[in-house]
Amino acid sequence: MALKYKRILLKISGEAFAGPGGFGLVPQLVEDIACRVKAVRDLGVQVVIVLGAGNFWRGKDGLAHGMDRTTADHIGMLATVMNALALRDALERVGAEARVQTAIEIRSVAEPYIRLRAIRHLEKGRIVIIGAGTGNPYFTTDTAGALRAAETNCDVLIKATKVDGVYDSDPRLNPAARRFRSLNYLDALNQKLGVMDSTAITLCMENNLPILVLNLWQPNILEQAVTGEAVGTLVSTHATIA
Image 1: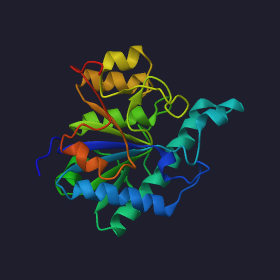
Image 2: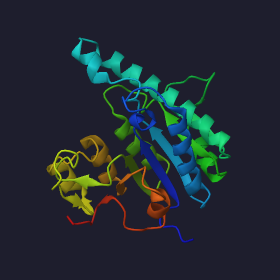
Image 3: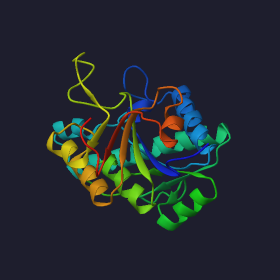
């Protein structure tokens, strides 16, 4: 099977691991995600994963009660490590070798993030899960995904969501919302379409790194994406609004 993308960064929100209430960690969902990731790994795709932490902690809730921003962000970074460890365990159980690296050193549970070591893991067929964001406050996990994708020379950043692309309004509230098949970076920024935060989009634009937004839960969606089928919404340099 011909691959369009041979090395991908998969950005997954913490909410993907949560139950109906949006919080906590449901092992069955984690294992389901692991199976989906393994399926593309088995095609020969090298996979880097960056995770969010919304299923454990939302920094804005802490800020609303007067918490220091840096403290709130550090709590969120540590929460991503919990998700990373859960996903690594699930991947190993379904037969996919994986490593967790963290931007904040927690050597008793994970490797520190070292770019060349991460690339070496990828070359050996291991899935690399990166926790703790960038290791710095004031940066989102979207920005962490864009940064790590650029650092590890990924061909595309896939933002896995619960929606099948980027819309001009919330499709859950507006049945007539229009889905875009493609956008360029400036359209995504200027129209504030919520693809990713502006720092992440700008970083992708400066490094000519395409962003593909898709619904992780659609059957075989990752396999379709890496083989170049038209799925989701593609944000790239030369794309036009379509």
